[in-house]
Amino acid sequence: MIRLDKYLADMQVGTRSQVKEYVRKRKVTVNGNIVTSPDYKLDENSDEVCFNGERVGYVEYEYYMLNKPAGVLSATMDKKAKTVVDLIPSARKDLFPVGRLDKDTEGLLLITNDGQLAHELLSPKKHVGKTYLAHITGQLPANATELFEEGLKVDDEFTAMPAQLSVLGTPDSDNEYSGKAMVDEKRMAGEQVTTVHITIREGKFHQVKRMFQAVGCEVIYLKRLQMGPLILGENLQVGEYRLLSEAEVNALKTIKGDSNE
Ligand code: URA
Image (cartoon, rainbow, N blue to C red; front, side, top):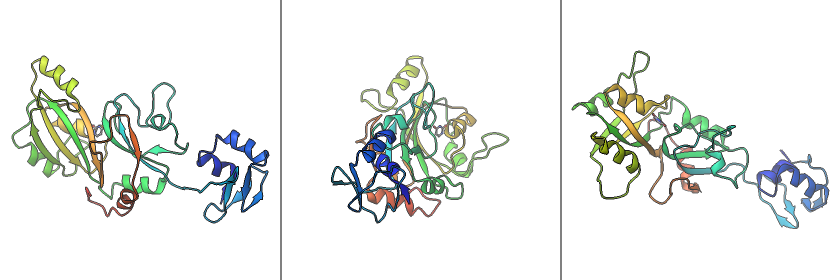
């Protein structure tokens, strides 16, 4: 059951105060009858709501993939900084990001109002794989891949779960690529830069940065490429978002755990 004004506001008919006004002005029917109380309770699954004679169906959950830009906070609101939810302006008001990326991290962020799914995806028991592209400075130890695979001791309090590291090499200086400005700056200063992919299965605070720090390197650019079955892909530009497809939502809901699929 849901209040009529919430139903209409969730479905973007107007703000909560606008929709109250529409209801009072007899513009809204439920099952063909004019309803004038904004707090009227209805069954969102079976009752038929119309605004100005047009049917307004109810969608309970929404799922967006955002390509988060650097400089934006993974939060729902902040007094000063722009948040990831501010980047989806037309959307309903109960959205939140599933987990966090650091302010300076870019890439894939799931934004939804489905608390149950968020809880499952973030559950430490599920070990949902998260793959990042990182540009790092410093010299990686020759056995870095094995160290990460064995479970890296990050500090006295934290030993990471096994993580997969692929060293891709030095970034190509001619073409455009994510993080090029950061890479160019370090190179101008004479530093060596290496590009890697890393997959982790936890989400500890600054985890990827701390893992590289523990092996004597510094992450100068970080972007999430994949989370479980969700892949950022090439088409979504930084700052853009899109609705997930039904197949993507189903894939998220059927994650068994310990997966990058
Ligand atoms: N690891 C980090 O260090 N930062 C992020 O934003 C995500 C993973």
